[in-house]
Image (cartoon, rainbow, N blue to C red):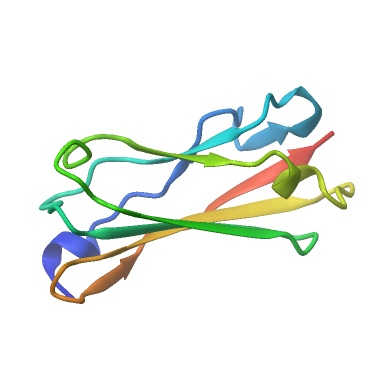
Length: 117
């Protein structure tokens, strides 16, 4: 694993307020954000994953283009991932991985978000 991939920042969820997502107020879709990372290169694979404590999951992969290198990467996450089977005290864990063209993969720290009606 290279140094560039060891320093990934946690993702953000644009609509979360102090680590809480108010699902009923959410306008579809939610926006998962990957901040720019060091030594990003065209062809890097960035995979964003959401897993909820209620058994829902969602994953989306993009391949970095020149336009995305050094930019905030935004993933549109369907609202139903958060609202399906919503229960009190439900949470969602968001993370992403980056796989470089050379095959090295690194995982971001998790972002834990409480899901509220």
